[in-house]
Length: 136
Length: 176
Image (cartoon, rainbow over all chains, first blue to last red; front, side, top):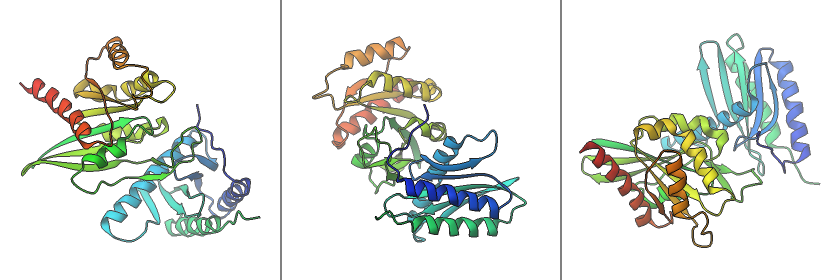
């Protein structure tokens, strides 16, 4: 049974969906984009055929947490993101430090996409989502 | 330096992170994050791993690894089980189907259990007497296993050390 996420404010879920639409427009070679809670529940996603979004969400949050752990032990400051470089693409996992609903943004990009551009867009998206106010 | 890897697994809330913290000689590291699963009354949950160490002697130590408990992190189970010399399965007897929970971990760690000793620690028995330890033993026997099942309060270091003693005893018997 797929895990069901309840209790996430609708405003946040809507903004997450919009954010993925914008990322898809600015980065043409994404094979997957997933926004998940830090414990691996999918919030919003865009994924090509054959990619299991729920698995991607869970794996990305584990990698993010492990990155944070290693960073803390290495005393290099608060964790920001993890990049996996593979022969045919990149996986970029960026923290979305929303004060009440921390999340992660996981992008899977073709090698032809510029890593710097992917990282820039991912961080920009993460900052915007982290600032979403749920008051009122 | 001789090092032995011991793995702690079991349901969310069964006490894997607590067990390692109770006996670790180093400050344990963990990957606890905010829990969003409404079916589980817990503020935080492990999504990567827990790590601690127990020094046995000047040239000998145990490396303790805790797995995430939730099945959607089962991909971590295989990774963490590599090279494990023993497995501790912690079960929370207050959950609706503890024997069903046990089966999840027996299946999920079948490869590990085929090669390494295992011990089952049952928590929260006082107040939740069913299933009993005999029920657990019967369930294990039915699945073709015969390893120790004991009651444990993972907040008590001595009780967690007993679980490790039971693993190490099995290792010694196999080696002899």
